[in-house]
Image (cartoon, rainbow, N blue to C red; front, side, top):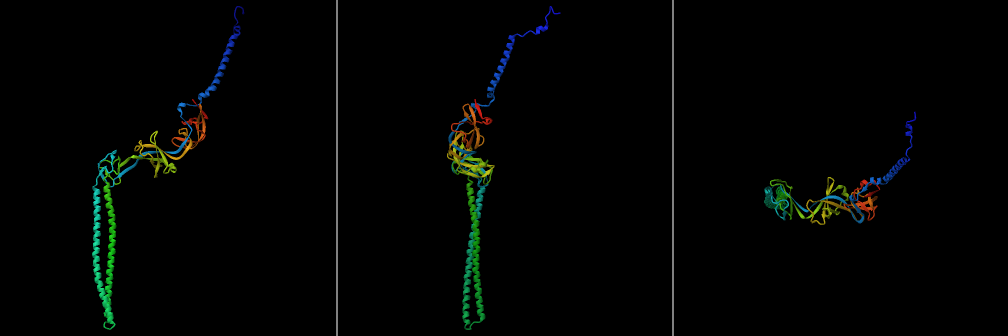
Length: 427
């Protein structure tokens, strides 16, 4: 039955309002346009958002300039008095009294400590007595020699008279024999007596020579012993004198021996006196630089952030300990007001110098020394990576051999994280 009721299919097949359709189509178009615009906008601005940039407030820059550049070796130094007297004990003893304390201003000849000198005095006396005994022995030998020589000379004279008498008698008997007045036996007996006297005379002469030579040898040996003893006595007296510990010059007492009563060995340090009116710098440097070091090279020692003192290498110690070379630097202004004993300084040893070169301030933007490096040069709001060749360098400047010109502004901060980029925005 169809009359009196609505067909459901007719209700679903009713046409959609055209106005509604136009509105829906407009929304879809608008959404598409907005999406495309957003994509275009992101494609333009997103790279700038994620691309690295440099904050101008967090970087340091420096201009390339013409100027002098020195090549330096960086080392460590210690300020020490140019003249320092180290007093050693000349004897084995003990400390009796300390007369001065570290920091005391001393005048030349002023006593510093008192040592026990009893043993040293006894040593001098003992050696002096030994020397006196040797001197007495020499005197006794000389007296004995004179006495024995006198005795031998007397005997020789008597024997010589006897020999002359026998010789004369032999000659007389020989003449008488010619007349037949003397027998052959009598002449032979007289000649034998003459020969015996001559032999005895020669023996006395030999005894005299032997006595002189023997005594001379004894005297020479004794004199050698006396010379040694004289030197020992003189040295003992000098040790005793040096054991009176005094200042050899005006200065400041910087160190003193152990406490009173302590045993002191010969050669042990007792005190140090420094002349604080002038200083030098003792420098330590790695032995890898050994071939570049020589006396006369200039050295700049940095006292603080602003002050430097200039000097030159006066001495290179011959020994190398633990891979370290020690140098002594003589200062131009050894009396600089800011120098203090044991003050630590940075020392820069100048091994080469160019009076006119392109240079840029030193910074962490360069790793290593001479050769090719990549740096960033400021061009407006952009830092452009540039390859440069670095020459000699020191603690202040790098020499620029290639790649930059005067007036270029270079970022001298650490830029290692940006070296993969050709340019970096500064904003």
